[in-house]
Every structure is written in structure tokens, then in C-alpha cells.
Image (cartoon, rainbow, N blue to C red):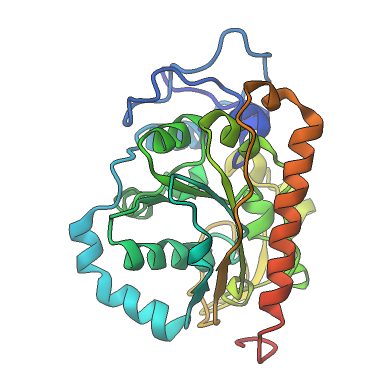
Length: 329
């Protein structure tokens, strides 16, 4: 789930973009730090992001992160709320726990629901209920969400980290699991007509990260999140006119049908998720060759990408077949 502040390259605005994930990290053992000093001077130059107060605000509010894990006191205080949401509101079914390796792993999934991806939230909440801090999972989030007052602080308290190479490297070095949604906003904001399509966006930086960190990839399939708000149109042309790519780092301005405002152009979170049933399945892990040369092996990267995409797509179709109703099944 971007001046003394690091300016993110044009190509690095999306979650786990290849160029952003290729920025080398120094001293990954430093688990809480500013991210202003880890650009590689030998890296290929990239076009800088446009200057502006919004980009400056995002930078200032996302430069601090930690891999200490969840705030146990806060998780306990909110447990009754999450129990209700998981068991009664979204009626979550999460299976496949037996597929988790007994060591730190990179979970790769898809998510829906525009800014409020409840399939992602419920995965992390269900993980906490199962392990209660004995095995730490870090969610990852878009800079715009991490920078929001209130929401950004909440994310940090529940263990969410920026979807950037430095923070993810540190999490794996600490022996923690990390869940990544490579498709980012093009995945979360895809239209309802594409609800069963797996959208990883052609972003393969996560595979190079897995090679560098020496962790297996665990695909995760989910359905139901697309019914928490209905994306009627992605409005890509409108997003371009509104310059949302420069302002909010997204190419999509989703036109949604949600509660309580009905049909709305949702540039920021504005809906209360519908009580759709969410099903999630952890799939069989995919072993990764940690030979450093593999990082630059295009054929190997493409092979792993296709294996991950196929695994998730098959899982989504399987879960979709269990639905009993068109909308809230």
C-alpha cells in the first residue's frame, strides 16, 4: 500500500515499480529511518517528479516507517471491532494457511475497492487474529494513503509499511512476512466488469526483491472486495485531464456507486464499504532462485511473473465458483 526529501522518479510512482524497486539499499538493518539518502549514484537517471506542495506533503509524511510490527495494545483495543467486521460484516473465509512456509515469505495478491481495499485489510486482520504477533505480517500501502492524517498513523500502528524497496528489505531482514499488491491502483480501481481479472500491472520488481531477500513468493487469491464499492468506470481520460498522476500518483479517477453518496467521482476515500462476503485463499508457494544473476535474467523474471499471475488467476476463478449470489455471495 514521494529539499532534503527524496524525490521519487516519474517511473517510481506506482507500487513496486521496477525502477523504484531497483534502488539499492544501504544498511537494511536500520529498520526505522528517513528515505532521503538511498539513491544509487550509479543508477540510470530518471525523470524527477514535478515539484509541488502535494508531492512535498506526501514525501514528508511517508519518510518515517518502522518494522517493529503491530501495536499490540491498539490491536487489543480494536479487536471487538475487527471481530465484528471479519465474522459478521464481511463474513470472511480465509483458507490455505497450510501453504505458508515456515520462514519469512513474500505474499503477492490482488485487491479491490478503490482506496479502501477491504480484502487487503481483512487479510491482515485475520493474520493478526491467527498469530497475535507471533508471526508478523506487514501490509504495504500507496504513499497517498500513508500520508493521510489519521489513516496514515493507523496504518503505521497496524504494521503497514511503504511499498518501497528499503522498507520491504528491512522487513525481510527482520524475519517478517510482507504482503504486496503489485498492481497497485490499476488493480484496486479496476472496473466491476473486470472483477475476476488478475491485474498485476506488468510490474515485476517484486520478483527481483524476492531474489535479493532470498524469500519464497506465496500467491494469494481473493474475491468479494469488488462488491464493497462498485467501480462503474475507471475514467482514465478524466484522470489525465485532472492531472491526477501528478497530484495523487494515479492514472485512474474511479466513478463509483457507493454508500452514502451514490454515484461519485472518488479521487479520495469517500464511501463506506458494502457488506460483501470476502473469500481469500493462500496458495502454494513458488520457490525463487536466489542466485544474484537471476535478478537481471529477463526470461527467468518473466517465467516467475507468469507463474504467479496464473496461480492467482486460477485461485480467483475457483473462489468465484463458490459464490452463491451475484452481488453479496
